[in-house]
Length: 193
Picture 1: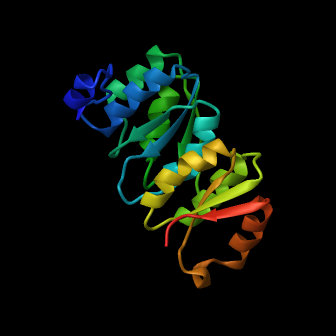
Picture 2: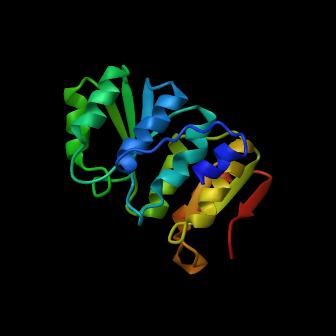
Picture 3: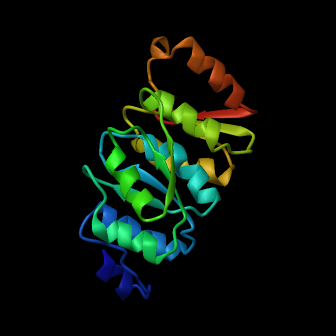
């Protein structure tokens, strides 16, 4: 694909590391601002980062992808070398372990964690603590989130929160519905079937 783009006259710049974590660092470098970053898992089964993606885009905050039980030295050095002061950890200790928090602290990087008891509660908490001021709400499926990946651009464009919910309305506890009603503004976009 890259070769074809170059043949069509495009200048290309590949942002690809050896893994997801390293690729996220290269993307972060393109964004430029690294005083505050978001830390999220690169686990294929987690939708947490999508709930924060519109906020990250609107505020030009890099999302650093984390994999495994601890942060690689390369990630920690990268953040230190770019004078990162604060990391917002997206998700519970199962997806972003406490060892990551400790390693950041040892490097002088303050961290705050945003999480809930499950992925839906985490999404609600992200949207409560990282509010967007648009008039819309973008809703994705927390258990099949490919549509929400594309929808995160709509959320960023309209300055709207992206909320990841369980697709079965009977599995949304009453306290979730109360919080959702606080987020809903004029238009709610439900992504996917």
